Image (cartoon, rainbow, N blue to C red; front, side, top):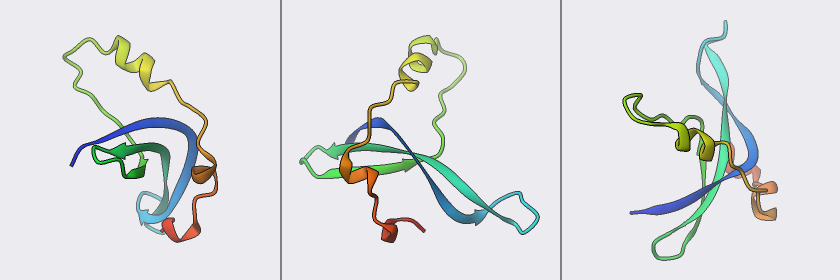
Length: 84
């Protein structure tokens, strides 16, 4: 499957992942990206991190990574059933 996604200004916290606090739990902060599959199915992705190999010119990548669009109304009101 291939998807095309765009970064939005929406940040969500997905709770209770194994982490580094004293209880062994933490919230995972993710940016919501919106997009679609090749067949046109709308998707949204919860992405905590993006990485690229250091041995390449990352100037344009870093600039584009800062670009965000306003999340759609659909994403602004993400149903609680999607949040773990």
